[in-house]
Length: 272
Image (cartoon, rainbow, N blue to C red; front, top):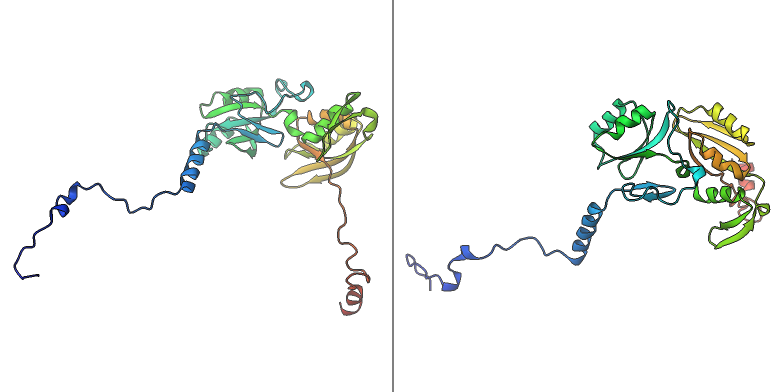
């Protein structure tokens, strides 16, 4: 029983409390949390890659995401000619790195994961950029990276007598040049501030017909009808950013207003 003024005797098991190991108030990590941390650590340890529509690769490990045909590769831009390059930095791009790139004389266009800019520069500027310690890798934006893969395969086949073409959702089939269409409709996207008229003339010189021109603030593009064999030649035009098949528009639900289905024509005509 408790008595005022009496000092209670502390049981031996409660003495030396300071010697006990500290107990965390945090709940134990679940297996899911540990897996997430492991994935994050693995991602951080993985070297940065360049992730293009034509494929992805670590430029310090391999030269390209795949084997590049000779007709879609550039060793270098001609002296004095500005061309488009990929500039990959060592990590997340800092403002001072971007400022240094601009100060070198390069013009910055698109960002590509991981840590990569598409930049336009001449050979002298390229040498300056290559010497920057924050630059991990610098290389040409190859013509092979500017063409939709299925369209490239079609163009390669059109330049040969026979070959295999991969149909979407199916297996590659052996076909001959005579089985291919004489022309295809394509969209040619240009880098901003490129000479649309000049590039249009180059496409027409290859036998193409320009069917539409879009000169917007953020994107310049051409629609053209062309022999598939020369699509590869278009990819080699310096100002071309991307080539893809022209979309084929289809009407859907265009009969819903008819009397046989929703019968809304009477409402439109008489009730506004």
